[in-house]
Image (cartoon, rainbow, N blue to C red; front, side):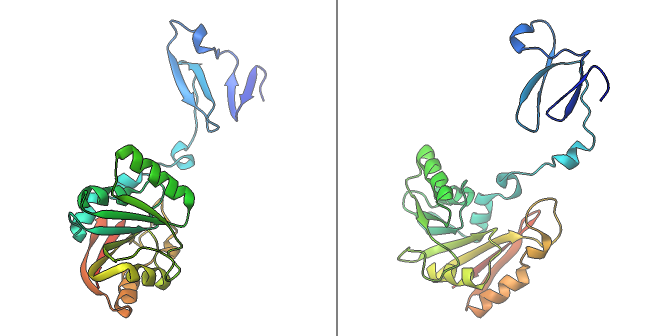
Length: 235
């Protein structure tokens, strides 16, 4: 390393540029830079940091709300006010849980099911913040037949980004009441810079085949998003 240079958190800083405490800087324009280790440094604006191929190091990953529009998908699938819905593998954010809760309203019910208790805690916290009294969480392994303790049947059971196999489909189908719907939304097999590896993705034809073997009838198929397909089956 050249004389007069200092290496901090893998960045080389030339000592001719001064790094100061923000309380000591009054008139100097400051640029705030956040390092990979979440260490905030206040750096004089004429200090030049060059990181080559930054987009390759830290690619942009869209949020769940950017990839999918839960309310639009649920309305397309036929969810309506007063219905009972179940999100199998709801995740911490519960994007589809709360979209469904707003659609079904006070007369309806939405169950968020997950095997991770931390995910269920996240949904419960969000339910309190949003005042969603029609949301209930259930701890269960959605790949074990009979494990999900919800009684009475649901108007719609959702499998969102679950890469569903036969065992999961059977458990989901068990919870759908006669005449109810099974909604499957998953990744298209085309390559994307995020999401599961292409080799692990389940083509819609495979899901349709599994559903047909279980006695379900395909009602609707559409592009649920740029990277996702949507399938609705009736029982």
